[in-house]
Length: 244
Image 1 (spheres, rainbow, N blue to C red):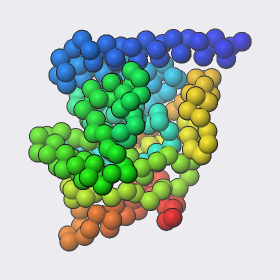
Image 2 (image 1 turned 45 degrees about the horizontal axis):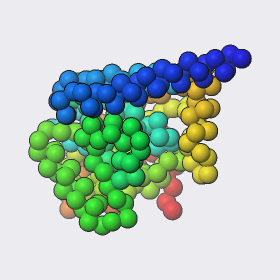
Image 3 (image 1 turned 30 degrees about the vertical axis):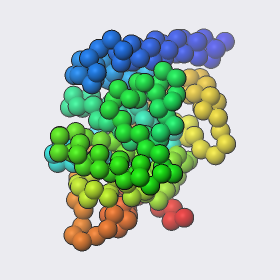
Image 4 (image 1 turned 180 degrees about the horizontal axis):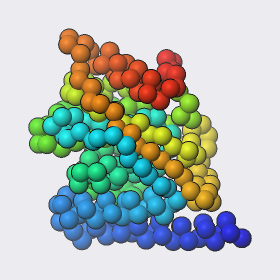
């Protein structure tokens, strides 16, 4: 009975927060600071409504020091909401790199657009190249992006091979560790089941740990740079790297 009541209350609060995000996108000046503040507030409220307790450790670098933040291990779609907590640290809501499919999600797709997300068709080389160019342009405008370099979710017990996209621009990146006891979403599990199980839990703890900024090695290609960063994160997490 307690579990059912908890799910109902949390679901109601989550819907209110999602609608708040959506209305912020429609009613407030597009990509203005007021809209970003509202999105951040409702985004963090959504996490809290789902039972998440988020802690931040370390120092977040400025967009000048690190135009790109790379976060891992990526274990769930809930990780994407980390963008709202990173914005709370210094008031700057970072944009994120998203699959083009996410843009068509009813209501949520519009909310993602309003965070200035870059949408990428991962099967289209031109779309990937355009995303890299956009990242470089945005860095010159003082904007900071959040990327999950593994490219897909796992059980979090090892680091998947990093995709090169975040490292092709050869700009400094700041690694962020996602330490969490959340239910991992991978394999054939449905998103609905993960949401339902998460809502039934008393709480879910997440810690975002900022590591030192990493600069690209001289004359190294993106793959080498990506492996260097993955090794740093693997050591800090004390989990192995998957090489497949």
